[in-house]
Amino acid sequence: MIPMKILHVLDTSIPDTAGYTTRANYLVSCQKQQGVEPVVLTSERLKGGSGAAEEHIDGVRYYRTVRKSTGIRKVPFVAEIDEIRTLAQRIREVATKERVDLVHAHSPSLNGAASLKYCRAHNIPLIYEIRAFWEDAAVDRGAFAEGSIKYRLRQWHETSVVKQADAVVVICRGLRDDLLQRGIDQHKIHVVQNGVDHTVFQPIPPDQDLKIQLGLQDKIIIGFIGSFFHFEGLQDLIKAMPAIVSANKDIVLLLVGAGQVERQLQESVRNLGLAERVVFTGKVPHEQVGRYYSIIDLLVYPRISKRITELVTPLKPLEAMAMEKAVLMSDVGGLLELADGERTASFFKAGDIADLAAKCLDLCADKEQRVELGQRARANVITKWGWDRRAATDIALYETHLRVGP
Image (tube, rainbow, N blue to C red; front, side, top):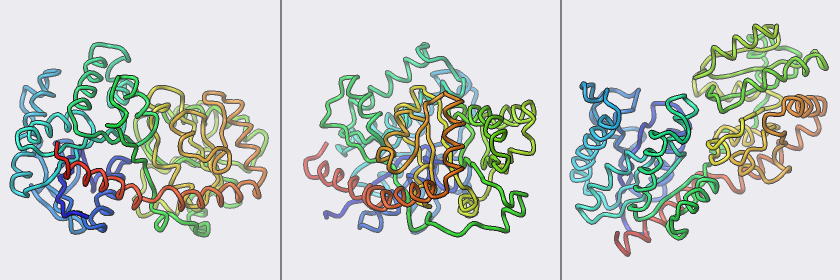
């Protein structure tokens, strides 16, 4: 392998916690273990951290961009232009100081656009990575409507950055196929899927103390662990609970996490008279997540069908699979891509409450089926979903472009 120093330009990073930061952390760490020297620069969107302009985390230098709060940032579009300008200046400072060989910019497209300025001026290759199309995430948050002027402008900007980058990394086939429909050369697009650390997420005995603490002794626990976004479909899971508990009084629902629709979910639970059947834990420390996985009998991911869920693969089901848990998912494209057919997960028709309830009851009643499903899922994760494989794919791509240039 040729020596290389790579600047990763990220929207946010650890210590912030999200699927975005988890992926970045594992890729950077694995690249370092495989002989690459990674350097990280985060945008203004970082929420946590020490507040220092530079800090070291696990032997990697992390540079930060100071958040601006000027009046111009309240003006749509002008704010984004100013954000790109500010980040481009910070990229120039860090890349010059570190003498980097290549820039790997991670979505959103603002990061890609800021990186392009430096890379083109200094004849350095730019790899641009897309985790999701951010205009679709904005639609789910209610920021604007699909097909609106803002939506089309965001989409145009993403496509523009993709066309100018030397290579594009996407996390799943759904994103690749969408870019192909936009006319992007297939040879430019590289799928580097999400992964999971199966040495961290591995089977452990149920934490009986936690069960007692939550009042869930002798219960069959259906669970969800993650962020409460609208597209996760947790409203559908709650709507299915009356039919589930009427058929089996021993089943409860455990919702671990917090987020966008938490209040609405809690209100639905109250309105349906499910207060004794649904437990909300709130956000739990990352190091405690394994305890919660350990007590859940069936993990359910009931994502609704919309662009973002059909195109994008999440991380959380892979964690559950690595812990040898039975997983039930809706049949949206992003979830289907995670499973090896019906061998490693069970599926229900997205948005079909009756089918969701029936599949939950079937799996809750059959422990042997759950055990077999979980065992096959973990075996598949170990074989196909390691972060080291993803990091190696990135490194091979870097080497190709460092040899031939931008």
